[in-house]
Image (tube, rainbow, N blue to C red; front, side):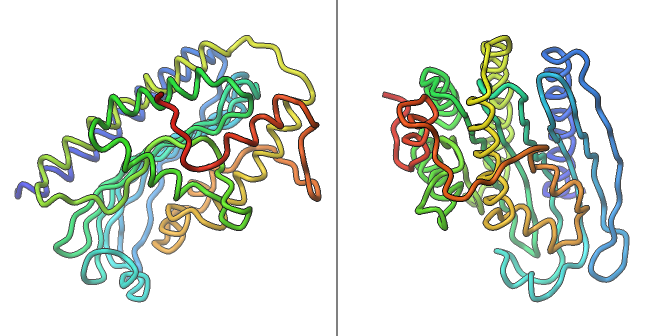
Length: 299
């Protein structure tokens, strides 16, 4: 077996292990959480077996709804879509983990993360990152999240942070970010497969310490109807981004992925109000200042 095949197999096993450890953390913090697990398979563009994945959908008291998914897919893809990717030919292989956790308490932020490895023809690349969508101005939590990812990414932090700010933005809303960012990278290939593999798997290990301490910290914090109303309107912005701009959603749908597993990123509840604005002078009005790119959360 070639070195590349070994790395691909190892990456798939790594994300499966990470999925299990994240599940354990969620159960620790939300003991009554309900888990629905689906093992699914797909066919490729030519109608041949094309891999599949393991979807884990959660509903609980702490996490209102959440998805922690892994997949390993391969085979023929639509030739037109293939030209929009970074490799060559109309065959691909991709493995990764993608997760989104929507807490019930609006004092706890929503979080998203994914880490993936993709091959198309002779080209192999990595992508991923993690970003936070809070609904209440706990600035110390925002600093903690970014400081953790700076420790993880080291010299790459600033460029990954800047890319995250650019990407997770509702450009149709006047460049309003969906949250307060984190790190994001795509198409990463330094020319050294082993080093790239190590960088991305090492990064993925920081997800658990970057987020779950914030959940534990805010778990029992009281909230009111205004907090919840703001959360549900921000959920609406989240839906807008995921359906209009998210590359992962497009990739999954264009490669004959499993629709429910792709759209598990959507919150269970959201609101839309024409020309919505939070109450003047409220913590939620303050939050609107934070959904802007370029903020420095380290210093």
